[in-house]
Amino acid sequence: MARHCGAMATRIQARLSTVCSSRWLQDWHLSLGLSGARLAHAGAAERLQREYDAVVIGAGHNGLVAAYPEYEAFMGGMVSALDPLLDSPPVDTAALGKGSLLQQLRNLRALRPLLQAGLALGQQLPRYYEVLTAPISKILDQWFESEPLKATLATDAVIGAMTSPHTPGSGYVLLHHVMGELEGRRGAWGYVAGGMGALSQAIAHAATARGAHIFVEKAVCHVLLGRDGQARGVALQDGTEVRSKLVLSNASPQITFLELIPQEQLPKDFVQRIQQVDTRSPVTKINVAVDRLPSFLAAPNTRDGQPLPHHQCSIHLNCENTHLLHQAFTEATHGHPSNRPMIELCIPSALDPGLAPQGCHVVSLFTQYTPSVLADGQSWDEQAKNAYADRVFDCIEDYAPGFKASVIGRDILTPPDLERIFGLPGGNIFHGGMSLDQLYFARPAPSYSGYRSPIPGLYLCGSGAHPGGGVMGAAGRNAAQVALKDFRSL
Image 1: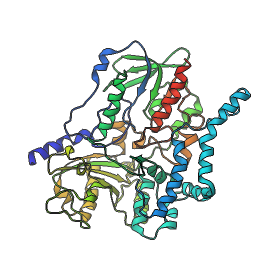
Image 2: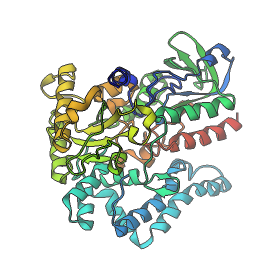
Image 3: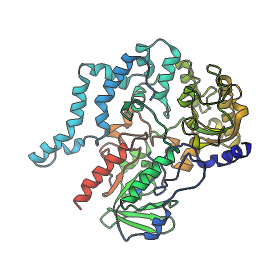
Image 4: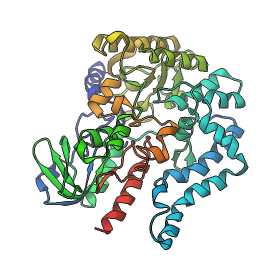
């Protein structure tokens, strides 16, 4: 077993369960799998067509609900009202007053999701407005007395965000995380059998079955533009030109518009907006290979060492009260990694044994707060990264003695690593903050929230577009519908 577990440790560089987007053309092979094999559709490169209908840049895709029924019902009502807004482009307010009277009446149909949401919220609208605008700590104080419960719920309001539970507007991020649905269960989370890469592979196989060609390990150099300024495909770093009628970019807005498009082709105010998007990230992801399950003081392992129910859940540590979360945030705002980091611990192999050799496990640690830029000009070198990881492991050891001794490998991804490896701006898993000033009409910039860009034929379809991050595919689906509508008129 030691030999097999050691092999698992060396393969941890597969970047277990990190979900992201980069400038790679359909790099589908990010996976939790241990084989190290990349199921890439590389053969497509040998069948390069003269022109495609559309080319897509990027890869990947890019809550915890309280136990009390009244709180669940309250949040559920808000989710039900706002959920349809995720499945349609934001209202194009500029188009409402344009065109003929008949066209203006047709444009009014775009207001339907907003009107339906308002009607669904009904008399609760003032309370729901407070959820969207107030600090989540204030909202949770209205519902609960238990500090550990409030702090645990508050983690979903700050996850992936450089915000505190006391930050106004932090309530929306929590709402965003409970909007998801799994097999008809609102707010439920699920693991993908075979790791997150299996989801990408499933999408890839569905696409290739319908005639798509997928190129991997092919970095995009720039978007090809015609003399009319229209997007005409992409140029790869190896010199290959992939011609197409449309281009959809799942890369971040920063990469798409600041690196792949000549700046002189874009409106100055648009470029400025993209440059000013808040992309601060507090996240350091640590992937760990262990030779046994963690045994927690609160719920020790059984003698047979088999996973218990809590091993199959999301485990939140250093969340005894919201003050701890706020203190961790405050330290990061001053350029220092948190002394008691917020830790979300998951053990995917407890549900999917094929991810690790028998008896061994993979542990995913989603931790914050860690600033992208350290104080006093320090860099995230190996010493700094290991010092922070040691601090995280010390915290886990307090809850689960013996954890450190079980570790046989680890992979540490700080915000700069997440940006360098996966193209996440500032290491932000959402391609930009999910604050109210960067949502709906303003995502990624005002007047360009409907997936179309200042470049005709170029669409943004990733987490930097409405409705933001999360493994749900809403931005891609919405963008595809807009692109298809335009494609039919070509």
